[in-house]
Image (cartoon, rainbow, N blue to C red):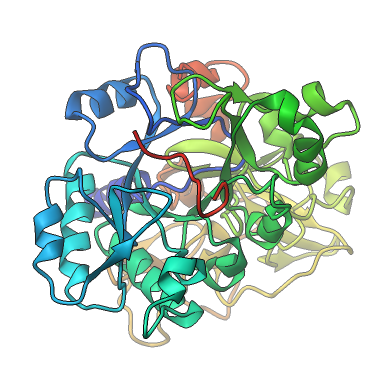
Length: 460
C-alpha cells in the first residue's frame, strides 16, 4: 500500500505541475507600454515584457495572477541586452520594420536564430513566467519583407511557429500564438492560447471560432476606447468567448476596460461556449478534459489544480437506477456489470445506472471504470487484490488484470476509487466542498486574485 500511496502522490504532483493552460473567459491585461503596479492589478492574467524584474513576477504570482512574458521572435529589438548576438549571425538581420524604427526584420529561416530564442525561452522559465508570447510572426504579410529577393512565405511561418511551440513545450512552458489569425486553424493544435490585436477592427475575430471550440482561450486587445469601437466590438464578439481588454489610446499602459458584452451591447449579447461553472466562479475546462466529479449542476474536471466545468453532453436525464437510489451515469459511461434492472457503471466511486440514451462501450476490464488502464494480457503479476478484482503495476501505474469473471456486484462499494483515485481525489464533497467549506477565494488566489500589422502599439 505504501507503493500505491506514493504513486498516487506522484500522479497528483504531475497534474499540478503541468503546463499552464488558460481557461476561456478569464480577465486579462496587456501591459507592455508602461510599468505595472502588481498591488492594484485585478486581472487573472497579465502580459508583460520578459525584462520585468523578478520581484514583479513573484508579487503577481503571490496575488494569484498568471504571467505571460513577451518578446519578439520575428524582429530584432535593439533595446534588448542580447541584440548584438543577433547581429553576429550571418544573413539573419534584414531591413527596417517601418512601423517600429528600433526594430529590423529577421529571416526566421536562418538556423542561427533558434539558439538565441531558446535562451530567451530559458530565461522565461527561470523567471517562472507561466507562458510566453512571441511577437511578429506575420512578417510574410509585410511589404518590407515582400521586398526581399527571397521573401518569407506562409509555409516558412508555419514551420517556424511549430518549432517555437514545440520548443516552448520542451521547456515546460505554455505559449500563445500572436496575431496571424489566418494561420490559427493550421496551428491550433500546437499553441495553448492565442493573442490578437484589433480583430474587431479588421473583422477577423470569427477566424478564432474553431480554436475557441477546442476550449482554448483567446486574449484580445482593442485600441482607442469603447465609444470609438462599440459597434465593432458588439458585432464581432457576439457569440465568441474572447477575453477582451480595451485600451483608451494606442499605448499598452496598465489602465484599460475589461469588455463586458452584456453591459456594453445589451442582453442579446452572448459569449457562446460559456459552461455552467462560470456562474459559480469556476472556469470552463479545456476540450476533452477528464470528468472527475458529477453533481446536479454538471460534470467537473481538474485543471491547473482547480475545479473547472466540463462542457459537452449533459448527463442522461433519467434512468432506471434513480428509482433504486443510484444516480444516472454520464452519457459515455462504460458498462461494468449487468443485472435484471439494467446496465451499471461506476463514476466518482459510486454505482450509476446506464440509461437507454447512453452510448456505451463494454469495459475490457474492471479498472477502466475506475480511471486505470487494463494490464497487458498475461504479462502482469498480481500486486494487490480488493473487492474490484486483481491489480498489477505497469509503467509505474496501477492497472486492472483482465478476468472473465465479474468480481464486483452492485452492493459491494468499491474502495479503490475513494481511497486512491487516479488524481488522488479527494472526492469533491470531502476535500474541496465547492459549495460549503471552500470558496473561490480560498482554493485559489486567482480571484483575489496592425493597427493590424503596421501600427501595433506594443512597445515603450
